[in-house]
Length: 567
Image 1 (cartoon, rainbow, N blue to C red):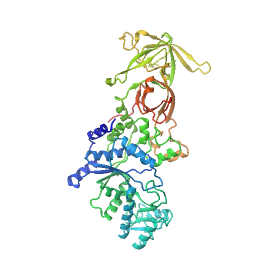
Image 2 (cartoon, rainbow, N blue to C red):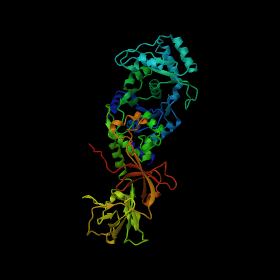
Image 3 (cartoon, rainbow, N blue to C red):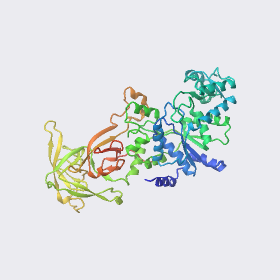
Image 4 (tube, one colour):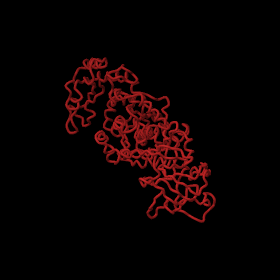
């Protein structure tokens, strides 16, 4: 799908009204920011984006589109210890893949390091900030609790001159990490813990990915973020609900520095998804300790993982629109996300035949050496996708589960003496079961076919209830098929990732099953990333990472069956 089509789709799909848009409507009506709506998406480059970030991306960029406004991409690169250029590149890739464009408005908090430092000097001169020598543990101890006020630092009343001198020496690298911090001077008795003289700057002798060793002091997010918003002319700073208690500090910084008509911070409930971890710290733990195959492992909720698994940007945008925007935290069933990808793929991807767990079938009365090319529709629900030719021969593969030697009642697939239809081919009847002499395992079936029952021949006299998919053994292509399931066993365990280092009990041991399978030959002609429905099996895509040369790898995107029930 081209960028123009994506942009048209986004422009034409008006986002449903939500409380954030109601606030913006009121601001526009009152002329608070003139006719401007300017948002931003401000990720920290310390990991890969996940489906929760997709909600924020769609909200920020989508809101800007709705109001013919602008949306910036700004990296909050204020902690060089955890940041990496790999993450920056992945974030840009993910935002573009989702269909959004920041145009020429990509910024970094590090763009403003000098200005942020100058603003800190201004706060010191106003008596609104001071250098504190308490250790991090002592600062926490002095902070107090929700029920008890904090205690003032013994360094709180240093003179402006002493604070200016110490802060400059902090910048010049005279002190080791953790020796001193710059704190705002607000109110140690405030009922909001974030207002009890929060840290504005800390010392960190770490090389920054953009500024190198130019700085050894770095601003805290709560200080850098509001100033960055104001510098960029942001009107509405949309963030998740955990920042609600930080809003007074956001407003305090902008007020004390005298920014006219400052941005307005608005909080919404972050996405919580069943059977899913929504924390970059915890996802990093999964990656670094080898529980998954990297950030783009198809079991990961990262955007890169979903992309590799076969999800489409259209499905993710649809999901984000369906879940809406709310003030109250709630958990969304992952079945809704799976429903969205099924809905997106069902009319636009071909339906092909693949036998995941093959069982050999010899059609004993079919002529040896004969090959027919049967016409098969590409998608029964979308006739415009046309037909293809599929080879049929004397030896085929069917699914092991499609045969039972001693079937229960209402088993309508293949069994001894029973007749079934092969999809778009013939009726066959099982005449003999061949077993391994040592294990007793069924290794082969001998069947006969009725040449008068060829699909499309108009034969209607005899009916059968079962229809099986198949592939011709002589033409089948070997493939590795990866069946992915939820990474976590239970919904209430999904957030407790810290325990996986000890026992792994909350990880699903069957989150990945690898099969040696056979697929129809046409599937070998498609490029990595191509998507299909495997008849009766689910939606699959060709893996973009491990498919190479003669190795053909398919990832299951989602099964055909859905547990989602639309309201």
